Amino acid sequence: MRRRNFVGGLIGVAVWPTVGSAQHMPLIGFLNGQASNTYSHLAAAFRRGLREAGFVNGQNATIEYRWANGREDRLPGLAAELVERNVTVLVSSGGLAASLAATKITKMIPIVFLTGSDPVKYGLVSSINQPGGNVTGISFLVNQLNAKRFEVATRLIPNTRVVGFLSRPSNPARATDIREVQNAASALGTNLMEFQAESVQEVEKAFGRARSQDVSIMLVHTDPFFNANRVQLVAAANKHAVPALYELREFVVEGGLASYGTNIVEAYRQAGAYAGRIIKGEKPGDLPVQQSSRFELAINLKTAKSLGVVIPQNMLVAADEVIE
Image (cartoon, rainbow, N blue to C red; front, side, top):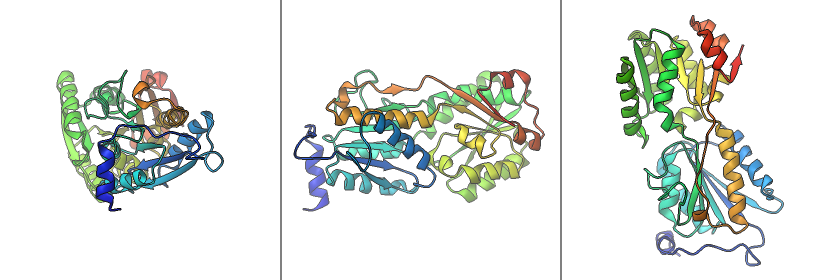
């Protein structure tokens, strides 16, 4: 059967697959826009949540992984492969594009998404409390924190005059997020300068330009590509002595100055738990989209010292984690 015809036939049908004698072991599709080596700790968190729900990969469940390795153009095809495998539940992660691809390819197979974007705004669900249809998921609110992260950046570097914003033009959420950051900058009377990068090489050049244009601190946009290449990104920032605020503590562990955002590891664990509940028979449309409610500030004092940055005492007191 040709893939196009097969997938097209699935899209119009809204019937949940059943877990029973016809399928002795649930098959879980795990679609991710990034690479397995950089997201392995998140995949492990997902399996932990699945295990807490009573399902262990290789024992009473099987996980089929599909990694796009940063190639968003591959996601529709990878999603189609998992649909053709007739997975019991499809988990989409590693960027908004993965979830958009999953929800477009099937209206039948239950989907659990992970996203830092507004799932209602981007059409993943019709409502947070009552998603409806075959989709639910975890929203870890990183994109909605743009204004707050801008404020944190200016508090880390007092008397900030110019804040940089590093973004990837092809990110679906970029246009909305840059407007939010611009509004935050206007409210605080601070200049905002945007820098764009689609590759590691362009990231390097962006930090070089930021240094030459006296950017006080760089606010790094929430983006799966930046997350997947966090080691190189942090190295570029430190090489050009540009203080930067990131979304995840993993950047700070790698030597980044500071991060403010939600615990993405916990979000992946929650996704595993939701997948387990769906396997047991709950309908995704009846499960409210879970939203992260705890935000964490992490600061690397060793990096601050190397950059010549003196972190205000009130920020050190407010930090959830300080790496020395």
